[in-house]
Amino acid sequence: MFKFLKKRIPRNVWILSITSFLTDVSSEMLFNLLPLFLVNVLGVRTSVVGLIEGLAETTASLIKLGSGALSDYLDDRKTLAVVGYGLSALVKPLLYFANSWAAVLGVRFTDRVGKGIRTSPRDALLAASTPEDRRGLAFGLHRAADTAGAFTGLLIAAIVVWATQASAVTLSRSTFQKVTLVSIIPAFLGVLVLALGAREVASGKFAQTARKFKFSGINPRFWAFLVVIVIFTLGNSADAFIILRGQERGLSVLQVLGMLLTFNAVYTIIASPAGALSDRIGRRAVIISGWLIYGVIYLGFAAANSGTQIWLFFGIYGLYYGLTEGAYKAYVADLVPQEQRGTAYGFFNAGIGLTALPASLIAGILWQGVGSWAGFGPSAPFYFGAALALLAVLLFVLWVK
Image (cartoon, rainbow, N blue to C red; front, side, top):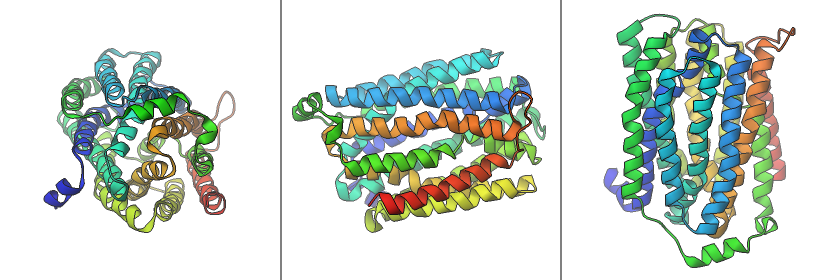
């Protein structure tokens, strides 16, 4: 199987996949514990968790828009990707000293700046490095490596939690600090792999075309797809709320990590085959299937009566991610020529990320209210997400022909 993939997958895809693997080992062991750190240690409300996650993703999204266009203009994807990964690696250790939600926001904000700088150029480099008939497989493999890194990071975090606080229901500061220290090593290794291993795929004509670029020149189907994605994402609040839902239904910190491991195992297994499937049957069918599964899962989160049920649904949630994440990126590359892809990925990533702020704020308010209003309770954000998923499916079928 590995020899088959080695022949079909270019060098840059492997390098970018290894970089994403190492980066996610670092990020996921840390950031999946962040909502628990905010609520259990710092004592903030879920609306503040939503604000932090929303502002962080919005920041990344605005920068993704600019970095994608800049990579088209400069005809240089690699340099921006290295800078973005490097910034995120530098700022993560500061969470060790965080003692307020404002400090957490500052670190999360800067980390997302790094993500914003790197994401669109990286996606454009990956697309430029891969033949069209293998694009779904390449993006699927990249997502699988990314998620395998998340699985590994979560496993390391689970070991640290087990060794320090075992079956405790709430997270302690000392445990979070230990995880922060461990996360530093893979973060910097990922930057080194990318800087030393990736090769730029460039041609002067792309830079010249980008300088003359007009937004009206992008395929109208891309804009229609982007609008539908934004509508879907408005109901797809930060996964931090699923983590809090699991804890609210009785899961301990270690069990929450076990739930996240299950999710990432499913995601990793599904991502590459789903990407290859989108090469054969088309991206639309795969994306629509993923959204329908998402809607059912969110209804399950809303109706769940126990932590075990949340765990089960979160495992299946990995199927949705595996089906859609690689297919999204490959579909954008199908719709837009190479010289415009940095800009297109910028708009795509920005559209999703900018919607993350209202999505997470809405989820936090629906759950716990704001001011004197108590909200509708923990199930409300998930009913809202399921409804918007169904609307997105209908619009995708009827509008994005």
